[in-house]
Length: 110
Image (cartoon, rainbow, N blue to C red; front, side):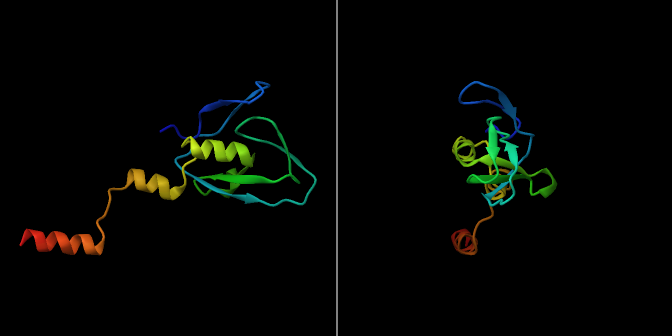
């Protein structure tokens, strides 16, 4: 699975953006009322703050948060390049059997 840090070409080939490396990302809908313009870290295109977009936060560090187009975020999530913390933990931590699973295993071993 490729995580952040991959170079992603823009859909219209006008530029290239690069996400910083991160093991997991927090993703939420952004709401901004100030008249600002951001650059999407995924496609490199401009992003008006008043448009509907998303906020992506690498490893929960709010100081490194970035504003991104909703379509770009959804595309990267679908491709597996913006894993959530839960997805990352599921990949990296060994699976712990549930309470029922542990009880069944004890019954089978007797």
